[in-house]
Image 1 (cartoon, rainbow, N blue to C red):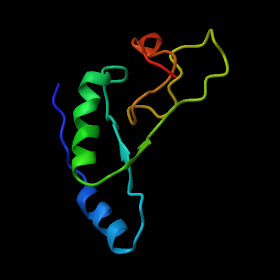
Image 2 (image 1 turned 60 degrees about the vertical axis):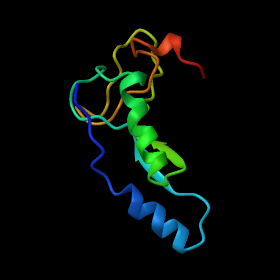
Image 3 (image 1 turned 90 degrees about the vertical axis):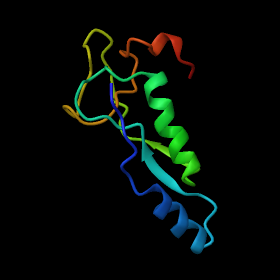
Image 4 (image 1 turned 120 degrees about the horizontal axis):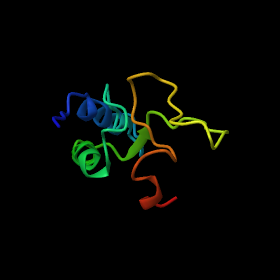
Length: 96
């Protein structure tokens, strides 16, 4: 699986610094296509690179509301976003 860091994180962190803000937030770990194909080991390098670029607050793109336990997989955004929800294959291995 190929991933990249095509974002403007350094610019965002720089602007936060210029304006005296102690938080520089950015959307992170967002996928396009391949629902449920991304997992923490693949997502971590993206977050690490964003921290190196000066981002210190990660914003999760999507976490679908799933009021019904028997309805899966609970996707609401089509091919966009990373699905952080209880139907991930690795969800029961993750903490709260």
